[in-house]
Amino acid sequence: MTSTNSPRIAIVTGGGNGIGRATALMLAEAGYAVAVWDLAEQATEEVVSAITAAGGVAIARKVDVSKPEDCAAGAAAVVERFGRIDVLINNAGVVRDGQLVKVKDGQVVGQMSAEQFQFVLDVCLKGVFNCTQAVVPTMIAQKYGRIVSTSSVVALYGNFGQTNYVAAKAGVIGMTRVWARELGRYGITANAIAPGFIATAMVQSMPEKVLQSMIDHTPVGRAGQPDDIARAFAFLADEKSSFINGAVLSVDGGSVL
Ligand code: NAI
View 1 (cartoon, rainbow, N blue to C red):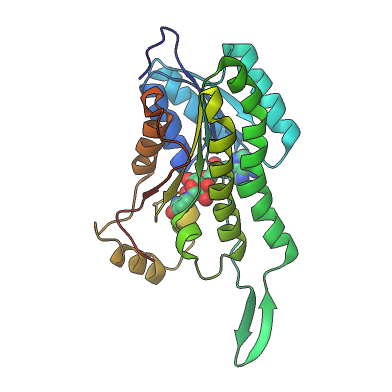
View 2: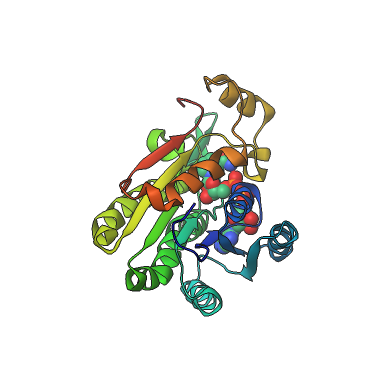
């Protein structure tokens, strides 16, 4: 995984569940010390326990990525414990779906609220900004870093009912490309992953018909699993992936929405 003798240090946001959990476990297995950040305290503790039980090193912290002060304090705690931050996996995310304007029988019956829009932007877009800004000074000082952020295939194709989420996930791609330009000179790469349909709690609330249709549009004929995305995170986080910068890697079974 690394050519240094001491372990690389990785932060995984939203690491308590789903894709983040799988990523924290996979990175720990690969030899990283992992800081698991999440709002869900119990889930976070469980991930850390699982890593520790397997002989790995991990710490849990309650961090709300939408709060800059939480991210700054979390980054300071990682530096205090491990002395550096090598990898940031920006994975925390939420959905609050709704149509821009909902029409029934020719009448407008609802719309996406300003609060609904802002909430998803605060976590999925500003959260990525907050966490990245919190760790980058440390990465610049050590002249090394890997920032991998979670976008989505919907940022590339759009998706019904997701104005807020698609705006945030498209913004993640934009920020990634800016950071690739700004930070590359310090040995820091910034890349994004665009997952397709991954079987986690986030998509469980979708109607069965919609889920089946998503599988039908996926050439490999199955939903993705959290490990499919964790593997891509681990690849882009690797020291040897140093010439991949500003890329958006689709991990979606070849699906076209
Ligand atoms: P999940 O709902 O299983 O896990 C998300 C985690 O983020 C949870 O543990 C939650 O507590 C945490 N979280 C939420 N708000 C937070 C906040 N403000 N601060 C810190 N942690 C917070 O979701 P899943 O499916 O594992 O998603 C992970 C990422 O992948 C998200 O960014 C999501 O948008 C993205 N994604 C997921 C896809 C899917 O099909 N599941 C497809 C494309 C992208």
